[in-house]
Amino acid sequence: MRALQFTQWKQPPELREIPDPDPKPGEVVIKVGGAGACHSDLHVMDEFDEGMVPFELPFTLGHENAGWVHALGDGATGFEIGEPVAVYGPWGCGRCARCRVGMENYCVKSAEIGAAGGGLGRDGGMADYMLVPDARLLVPLGDLDPVQAAPLTDAALTPYHAIVRSRDQLGAGTSAVVIGAGGLGHMAIQILKAITSATVIVVDQRQDALDLAASIGADHTVQSGPDAVEEIRGRTGGLGAELVLDLVGVDATLQLAAATVRTLGELTLVGIGGGSLPVGFFTVPYEASVSTTYWGSVTELMDVITLARKGDITAHVTTFGLSDAVDAYDQLRDGQLRGRAVITPN
Image (cartoon, rainbow, N blue to C red; front, side):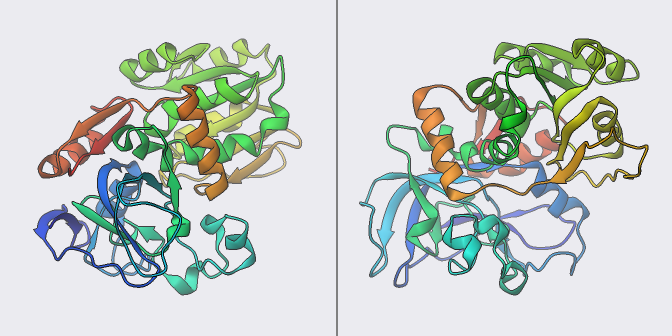
C-alpha cells in the first residue's frame, strides 16, 4: 500500500510502498478516510533533531484519523467491518490509572512507551490502511463522514479539553480570547459558542482566518499587532479575559496572552511554537493561572463527536489526495490554508 513516511530528520516526507498491515490478536485495521495535516507535524519534520523525541524512523505520518473498520484481529470486538470510526490519537499503556479513566494522553508510562501514537512514532493514517493496536482506541462516528470527522480527533479534541477545564470560569458576561484561528482555533471558537456563555474574541495575523472566525461565531476579531492588547482589553471592559487560549505558542503570542488575561483568569498554552513566558510576581495578573495541556481524553472525544453529530461544530476542511500530501504541508507551512487540511487516501 501507499504511505507518506517521515524517513529522515529535517527532510520532507516520502510517499513509499509498504506492506499492508495484518492485524494480530486484539488489533484493528481501518481503511483510512481522512488524516489531518497538523502544525505539530511541521515542528517534528522541520525543527527536531534525532534524539529530541523517542521516535524511530521511518514511520507513517498522520495522527488525526478516521475511516472504516477493514479487518479485525482475533479477540477484537465491539465493531463491525465497514463501520465508520474515529481513532483516538494518544496511545498509552491502557493499564495505568490515567489510561483506565480514558486519559491516555497523560499515561504514566509514556516515557517508557516512547512513541506517542499513530503518526507520532508509530505508523499513522496517511496511508491506504492504518493498524490500530487495540479496539479501545476507536470511537464510533455514526452518520459522520470520516473525511470531515478526522479533525475532530485533534483539532477539536485538543481545544475541547482546554476549554472544559476552564468552563466554570465562562458564565454569562465573561470573555474568552482565542489566539490563532487556524486548524485548532476555528474549532475552539465553535466549541466555546456551543458549551459556554462567554463572548469570544479571536486574534490572528491573517485576514482570511479572521473572516472564517467571524463566519463561525466569533463575537469580535482582532488583527494581531501593536494595538491588539488595547483592543482586546477594550472589548473586556478593561479587565481582560477569564480565559486566554494560546494556540500558537510563540513569544509574541504568549506576551499577548499575559497582557490580556484578567485577575483570577486562566492562560492556557496549547500551541507548541517554542516560545516561553517568564512567570514572576509582576508578569501576570494576581492569581492568574498559567498552564499547558496536551490533547484530551477518549471520553472527551466522544463528547466532541456528539457535538459534531448535533451540528454544533463542523470542521472546515480542504482535502488533498495522498500523492498531494507534501503540497498540503507546504501550504500549511506558508499559511495558505483556512481551517484544516485533510489527506484522503481512499
